[in-house]
Length: 485
Ligand SMILES: [Cu+2]
Image 1 (cartoon, rainbow, N blue to C red):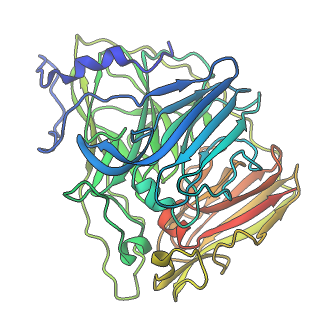
Image 2 (cartoon, helix red, strand yellow; image 1 turned 45 degrees about the vertical axis):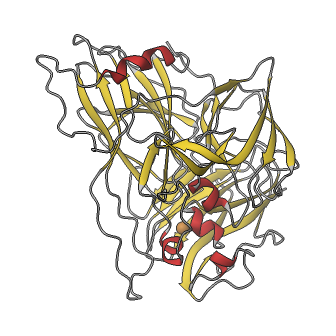
């Protein structure tokens, strides 16, 4: 049944290579430099008596990929602790900023108020300061997998690439025949020899940085242990600032049960699962035979920022290993999953339409972020021709309505669209991809394409943002405000 972090089960995975008769190991071997540590769950903090009160200290100095680094973490680790709530709980976070630049906190995926000291992206917590967040989670909030990360405009990409992220789970949902319930928070970063994280070049910011190291819970290519006949729930979170993940597990299908914060109507098998930055997918893995199986991410072509401008596309690379699933024990069939899941019903028909466009153009930012690095870019990143201005109201929506939005992308790079607070259902996309039919909060808008979304503005009022979840683009100005009143 749905269990805790499954710490006891982790020890077995470190034993190394065990050949099992009749069960050929999968073909890919571990990279030479891999640490091959057992996957370790982040520390978990669970609400008690309707409340989770925690302090998160953002600071430099964490262990990452098996080394001591000058990367960033919450409470000394990257990822930070997993925060575990139930619908109706209050999340009380004292965020203390020990960084050398402003920060704040976004509860990505939570359907909570964007006002005051709740999930408010306009707050600024200066170096040395602390701030008390109070985030009431509504009693009817759906269970699901969310995450938290800083969202102070102009610094978001650097702080996430540096390591500031953590999982945020709302418990509940149907009982599932799984023996382990694991967070798999995937981030990427680059580390210099001295353990610092390099400053991004203008070209990297325009393309959107992809780190040289792809990490799972801050570990490089850890080992996930399993036994035949025992299923596991994996909460995959794409915490990379630009990288699109195309996740595949050798020798297995991934049975997807939830997208972002919502259950699907039924478990859906995938050979490969595409997650844009910010997306989550809950999957069930049902090993039935012993072996070593690589969890990897395949290359994904999201376009080239400098196409048509004399730029060259990034060098094509092969698949990247995320982890190894080590299955030991006699063959056994894993229990069947439920045939139906408690998906949310589709929203009511839209009563208003609206269009908005992600645009890249020649010419740098003008009076943009105050961030001298992104202001110096030779290319502009705008929404509807305007760079982000926290003091301007870009979209004003009537509370209680359902709208249909067409989000277009005029440029040569795919941009992930993310709207805070109000999840949407994807109705159609220009590339004809299948849609999940359930609410989600990030969707990839294809290069020179569009997506059509149905958005109920029925839960909370207030002012928040929507933006490109390639966070280098968001910091460069590809963000807009929305007021629901
Ligand atoms: Cu973008």
